[in-house]
Length: 104
Image 1 (cartoon, rainbow, N blue to C red):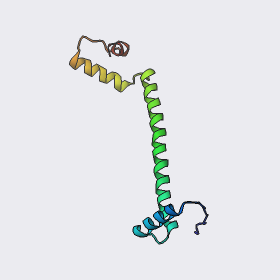
Image 2: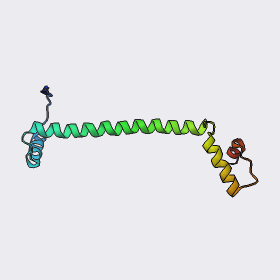
Image 3: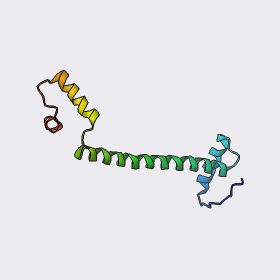
Image 4: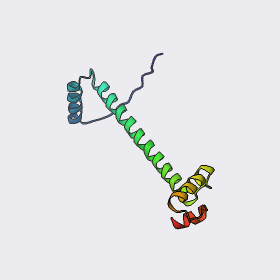
């Protein structure tokens, strides 16, 4: 499966070109183009990964706050855990979640 080759043209100063050419040579790249593509690809992946994490992070924060403000109804396992907790640490307490939430 052949990969199609595309072209990007850029204009840079002689000083920048010499700097990039020297860095490519001492890094062991065969060509300046190979060096530039390698670094640009690595940086592009890093940026995309960072932005993706940020978006997930915002979505996660939104879900977390939503769960705090509008908690789901307690399921059977959670009710059982509250009963066990109260049996061990607070036998006089009610196993009612509404009263439990008000204390917290």
